[in-house]
Image 1 (cartoon, rainbow, N blue to C red):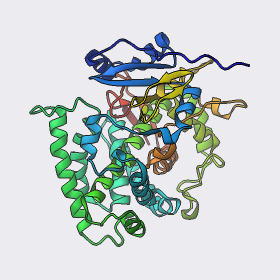
Image 2: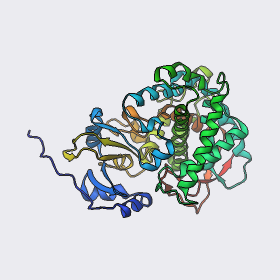
Image 3: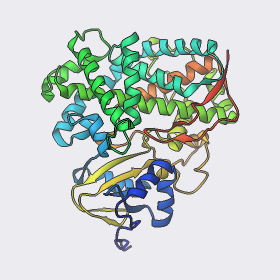
Amino acid sequence: MAEAALRQLPTTGAISGILEAFAFFRDPSFAKRRFERHGNVFETSMLGQPMVFIQGSKAIYDLLSQPDAIEGWWPQSVQLLLGRHSLANRNGASHRARRRVVAQLFSSSALQRYSPDIIDMVEDLAEELKTAEMPLALAEKMRSFAFSVIASTVLGLEGPDRDELFSDFKIWTRALFSIPIALPGSPFAKALRARKRLLKKLQQVLSQPIKGKGGLDLLAGGLDEAGIPLKDEDLVEQLLLLLFAGYETTASALSCLMQELLLNPPAETWLREEVDYLCWPPEASQSTIAYDPTHAPKLDATVSEVMRLTPPVGGFFRRTKCPLVIDNVEVPENRVVQVALTASNRHGIGDLEIFRPQRHLEDGCSVNLMPFGDGERVCLGKSLAELEIRLMVVGLFRKLRLTVIPNQDFTLKQLPSPTPRDGLLVKVHG
């Protein structure tokens, strides 16, 4: 059979990209509308930056199967707020070396070390929720929990130090995907100031003995290999990145998971049938695997379905180093490509627009998920996020029941990652 003829790259015709950028930030269906019009690969412009959007398994495979022909890329706002030393802004050998160092904080042995503290935090949160004033913004509690895990368990920060860091961190994350113009009082200007305070605080963390402080001692073995002095600005920016990697994805996934279950009582009942028979808390030696797909298939299916509908990373970027063919479309050299995960996960035949976790336990389910990105630049916090989500769901569901407060906005703010607009207001029943 002859191969399909190559097609020219469809384009929206945008030149300055100003209107496209406003639509991208405001319209959750931005990519979907344009895919329907132009196909699975199209080009537009974002504030003067030519950008190619792709969806579908073939297009994504064609891109990621050519790792030597692509490199990492982030919008200017992300580049500036993460910093020039950050491994997110590096490519090639320097990226791989730093990634090996930072990845030690998320290894299997590291997760085993963190698990007892995470379980204690889930227990504490459950008790706090029982006595909280109603209505309660559950999404904010999920965010506070996710940050406490990464800041306390990994960095060893407690009390006022952690709270101070969290205050600046929220300011910083709000502007990660924004127009990078530092007008006085703008979110980006506030984020730049917050970044300076964050780096100063992280430098103070590194200036103190690290033995017994979270997981920082796990870094020591790989620092020499990467040529990163412990107190160097380079390492501080890696810690800032891991705060984001270990926090934002988890907070988003937890908030969206809780919302989907609370808005779909049959799905919650289906999941509780399994959770009610799971041991809580898990034995220390089994804490990282007690709720894995083998022991808790319904929980795994539920998490997968949330990740499909509302992946914490709605898309990721690559830049072409040479001309590529993606889904039979010619993409030129030096083009930024955005993999539109949210659109891809809903693209195809069947009931892909509805929340139905059972699909992941059915024979023939072919959903290919990449909720944390893919390839050599997959989100570093993936394994920690998955562990936290499973521990949180089982711990909370064994301790209490939640019901949503009516007449609130359940739509999602999309940036920097999906989260319920009104904070997911709930009532707690012990």
